[in-house]
Amino acid sequence: MTRRQDVLDLWLDARHIGQLLRGAEGQVEFLYDADYRSDAETTPLSVSMPKTQAGHGPDRVMPWLSNLLPDAVEVRDRWAAKFGERRNDPFTLLRHMGQDAPGSVQVVPEGMMPASAGSLSSISDARIAERVQGILVDPDHWVDDGDQDESRFSLGGIQGKFALARIGERWFEPNGRAASTHIVKPGMAIVSGVTNAAVQAVEYVTMRAARLVGVPAAAVEICDFAGISAFVTTRYDRRVQGDGSVLRIHQEDFCQALGVFPARKYEEDGGPTMADMARLVREAASLAYLDNDQRALTRLFAFNLLTAGVDAHAKNHSLLLAGQGVRLAPAYDLISAHGIWDADRVRHKSSAAVKYGNSRRFRSITGRDIARTADVLGTDREGFVELLGDLGRALPESFEAALAELPKGIADERALRLPEHVSDFANSVVGRVSASDLARENTPTFAPTEQVAAGATSGHVWVPGRWVRDSWRSGHYRSRSTQR
Image (cartoon, rainbow, N blue to C red):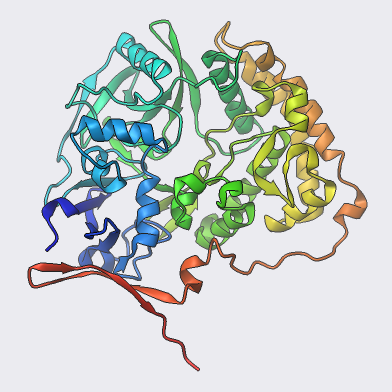
């Protein structure tokens, strides 16, 4: 018999969506609530777990849950210890930390409703500064170990961060059903000689420059909390209403949508390719958003190429889901390598998170690779090169404008030279393309790859679990029947 601690309820948009059930061997499956599933207006948990099926197996559920949590095992261990748990798996941790997860999903113990009312506890700038400094001293210190009543948020990713709500000009810690509105992170220095403040400056300038050249990107700012600066992102999956309440908007990152564990977010680790991500948008985006989303994704990959964006992996792209509508989310976590490393290191040693054509290392990307990139993105080759040229000409001014917005003294010399270095690098990339590179040869077809079509080509279908009298019979795979 499945124990109560092996069942979790999932809520979406304040409505019960279904249950997570953990079997004896730790595998977790998801079963839609029958009424929720039959309502044509409700939002699916994931594009990888459509409502056309009553339940979904561990191959989809376990990666999806894992991507709700921090990547670092050390952070998960800290959370498990905080709640007296021996295990640090997503099912165990989300029982405690799932009430304010990415998107609009809320995870609670079986039979428990998310708090019907939330509360906001005012937090001072000095206290926020302490939390920022706490992460700088101990990168695994996302939450306070001794405070059992603080807000229960869960955020994915590798960098230390925490979530707060801002209403007007005041900051709050959300409790119960109250939602956060902003993500605060110190900007971890990853290179000797580059300060945390300088990393904040580079990410801010890159994100702002992206918006200035027409890349849809999340709103960001650098805030001063009692003399301590922090990088703050406005959550695009939250919306503050006129009465001060906060609406959650469902979202999932590309790893979740593709059924990929966070450890495989980079292509070099076996994760999604540019083709996988482009295909996901092409197949998942609603017709009303499709053209805009494809253009936005193309512009984003072009921007990352020209600015040496090294972190554009699958977890740094997301989808927004509302009812039957699916669209590309704004870009986030954009950072130019030119603000972190010297120009020679960027030009000769740095690599992209995904291949452009056949190359990841920036110095090795050829004109033919750029032409193939256009093919993969489903856009015209000549048009893509024209886009690169237009962006290349606009980038210096956009980076200059973004730099001018920074608080005084936060940018180091490398950050201040971003406009110059980005311009030189962008010109070198565009200059690699010749007329012969644009000649038509073997343009790719868009047949499903192993990554995207794993569930469809495995030869097996998932049979959802079910209750038999008082016992839970776990789901299982059976061979897919074929017609001859």
